[in-house]
Amino acid sequence: TFVHSESLTELEFLYDGAVFVNESGTIVAIQGPCEEAKVKEMMFPRLGWAEADVDIVRAKDGEFFFPGFIDTHIHASQYPNAGIFGQSTLLDWLNTYTFPLEASLADPAKARRVYSRVVRRTLAHGTTCAAYYATIDAASTNLLADLCLAAGQRALIGRVCMDQLSPDYYRDASPEAAMAATRQTIEHIRAVDPQMEIVRPIITPRFAPACSMDLMRQLAELANEQNLPIQTHISENVNEIALVKSLFPPSVTGATPTDDNGQDPTSYASVYDAAGLLNDRTILAHAVHLTEGEARLVARRGAKVSHCPCSNSALGSGAARVRWLLDRGIVCSLGSDVSGGYSPSVLEAARAAVLVSRHVAQGAAAAGQAAEEEADRQKLSVEEVLYLATRGGAEAVGLAGKVGGFEVGMEWDAQLIGLGVVGEDGEVEEQDGGDGNVDVFGWESWPDRVAKWVYTGDDRNTKRVWVKGRLVHERK
Ligand code: GUN
Ligand code: FE
Picture 1 (cartoon, helix red, strand yellow):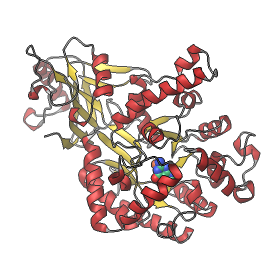
Picture 2 (cartoon, rainbow, N blue to C red):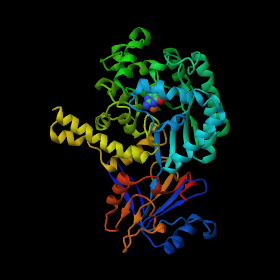
Picture 3 (cartoon, rainbow, N blue to C red):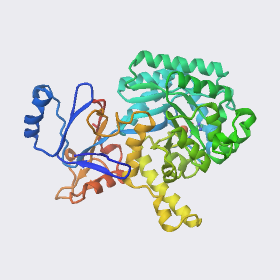
Picture 4 (cartoon, rainbow, N blue to C red):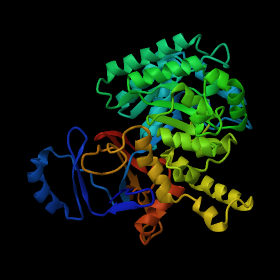
């Protein structure tokens, strides 16, 4: 069984089918329900394949193939802090927990230890592609790229840029120093993966408060020159937004009211837009408190949102209104945002996205802002969050049509999911996929099985993972 998103609201199920993947990892044919012998007889000659040369992966009872997850916002460098945030909120969390850890990864041995682990761990959770933030240290950022390439995980690798308002021990000395280090990581990645098939650089101004206008402008220019993606944070926390307003008046940004659809030239989105950082290759994490004018600006520029529900809940940042963003034509995807987010799992983020959307709905109804029907519309379905985790993610990282679904011409980035099938004796056999938390009795419909996976599954259900046809994780 193959399951993928057909549209935002619908999953497509292919039962007893077969997907044919060539040596370079591209899907060359898809066969509908058919017996294995017949499929081989029909398809192998047509593809010019000799059976002896073909690796056949058979899904067992209770197993299904699903596209690999795309985590559009994760700080590889913060992985050791996953789950450690106490009662902090964004700005004190950065100073207390985050900057000291990130700074410490300038130690190459420590960086190797942390980055090796986070790549293995996210692959084990079915993340076949991740947009990573590393640190300001170029050498260890390059190491993260090397480790992703070796492990076979598609990755966008961001060397973090921050030249103001950060501690002395963890800050770029100047915009020029940040640019030089950024160029160094870009060159390294081009050298190790010239076609940029697995690893790609991503321009990474940390967030407006930590970046001078000069630095943001130079980064935008570099991104345009080299057609590179951009990632940053936006409108995560109310104190952060106030800080941006005070740091970036129009006299600093040169923003005019027309930049923000006649609304507010001091808005967070206007600051990025004035720097030239908003375009259709930009991933904006959080977007919790965007105004109507900002959302319209983001939509007009074609920038994508990484929704980070675990992080926004953990740091008390707020509840992003995903339906509201989607209604405005903004592409949304999911980010774990480790370690603002406590979990490296995109499945966990998907589950949290469903729950947070229910809080948004309840909040709107309770505040009298929406009638019951309109409030209900804020709720995201299982189908929708899985779309965000795959197709939405692919759009955000610039790989739409290449990954995120099973179609001829797309690449085989996939996970084999196993749910435990309960036998007559009430036991689940290991060989039937049964070492996880999900019990299937056999009478559930396939949509119900997928819902059980989303709400109760974890990495124990992720049996095997492939990127571009290469097996990159197998659960032992
Ligand atoms: N804003 C600036 N830096 C960070 C970070 O590391 N994590 C989160 N969640 N928000 C940020
Ligand atoms: Fe983040």
